[in-house]
Image (tube, rainbow, N blue to C red; front, side):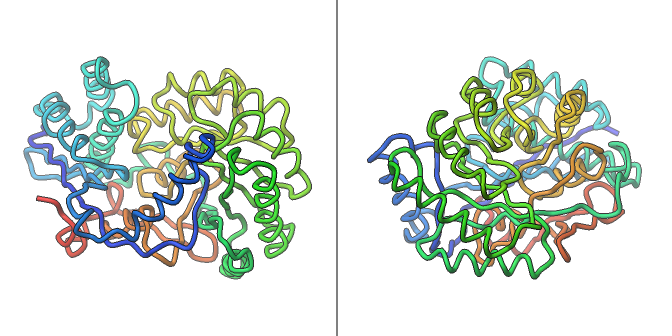
Length: 399
């Protein structure tokens, strides 16, 4: 069996529901500009679709073998540039190879693109191809991918609801959180809405958001909160001390991923566990994060770090340091890794009632796992058990 073809299916941005929520972003440390960028991001949802219809937002990699087996690898933050890398740079490197030679093919792709890659767009493109190769291996052996990674570690996966964004009306946030508790979730994550540019009044508003959610769900449900890289180290340390009474399971991405020393300082001085790694790449990036004792929870994403071939190395590295790994996003490529890993206790799930970038990705596939009573069950279908949703893909496919 040989790899015969590599295609990049371009998916344009769909129509979005105007949001009533927001979260901190990396620009929140930029004072007035941070607030302007926040308003601009919300405004993009309301822009006419004619202004956005040519923007590629997801890339689906389809790898086909010479005997007709197709593997699918989704890249949730896609672009036309990424599609070009998949088809014109990485594709020629793997065509003709065996889809079972994932170690060799990964090194070939990575080492051939060091001058333009190492992190970011190129690594995500490598991830898409690698994920598709694992899908092929599962289909060829008639095994679910988690069996190829080590088999089941439990019957079902515990999921946390990841949908509590900052809102102008905290009482609405409380209603949504209470609803997830009734749905059976035993953990959930919220977003902070304010950063350094909002001053001490913003810190008080962050506390009010956490307080209203904690009161709505009680003390028995795990609550996490995400700063999405919008704080400075000093701001984070002050916020974490103020947040201690609310018993957060972790605060996520308090600073930008390049500030490893900031992460380590926050972890040393703050009173809440720290999670990070959603925007880190490869075993080398995670080695520094882990060896510097910068995080309590490691948050990789298989479709960013380099695919399953690289992700399983990162999970093993974290396990050697007795660190739990909780991946970003619930998509099939992450869930099969969670099922096969003893130090991955949770899976993130986006149950937004409105369409957004997280929920739209799942619409593109049939067979994406769902949550019932706070848990995710994985099928025993070969590969990842997913197929293209031709109706949705056809509607939003960019020729």
